[in-house]
Length: 415
Image (cartoon, rainbow, N blue to C red; front, side):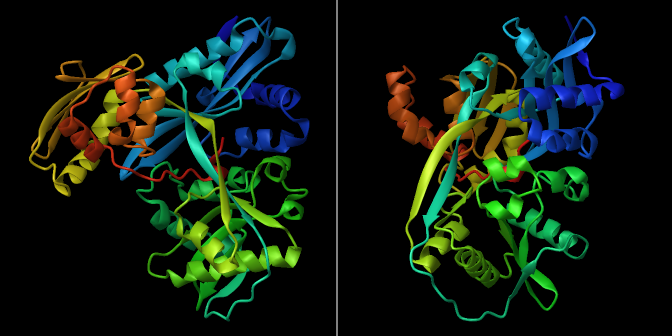
């Protein structure tokens, strides 16, 4: 068994392996991810070779992700495959350990993957994190008053610069969103995976909002993965200076659904995103939500992660009643330990276990407070059951450092 970086001439063999193990009809997607992704580098492809043949494979996609205003270096784990006749020999496990070492050497902060076999990845340090889907059952068709905004299909060359700007404005500082440089928008990968919008609302040449919206017939012949696994409403964005454009976009989405006589719209938007609420209000139909945990994160470096969060921590303290508080917390998450020292609005990160208050968390609980899915106060009962007894003032200080948030990971940023 040889574990190593892939070689340039092996990309076709890798695509053959992925297509054979996963879904042959998605071969164009897999090939595109290795030949058209502008972020791709050969050392991101980790291979296991037996008798001169690639029998197992893992791809590490290089991404950057917002955690509040902080930007984290994110290693996206994808396309974990092993030839059926070589399974049960530990090859995929060896590749995952290799991928972890690679991400540590490349100074990643976090790693992210999507899976339906969570127990396989848990022993390697990944833990689930929730995502929210909505479904809107369409009842009576509504009509809407004309708007000053014009709705039209997205045009790549005409619109992309504005769309990229709107995306950055709408998502800057929005926890869990991926940073998208313009080259990523323009490469073949973005088009294959359905990243580009389908419609925009415009006034006097200025785009106010956009949507990535598709119904089953729209995706036929484009990408089999999109048609099979993606919901209807995949992404929206709007300019803060033009909030009425989002209402016009909402009407356009509903009218598109009415035109196709569909019974419901599904989407990957958070519960309190304004588009989620507008769709319900404007259609007169109730929303239903489902939560699944097929997303999994792994901490690659707790110290680097906390170092990058210092400005966010200090901003939270400054704007709260905790600005004059002090505290010393030793966080232990998996095999990582790191101390956060808080001293009257200033935060210091120390790469040791010297913190006075010991905060030992499993990765699952840590992710939930890190991303703001829950606060330390909300987890206090669970923590006490598990033997972590924090004092009320400590809970208040930690809840300030790690406030409630509503993370958003757009589905077209899957890898």
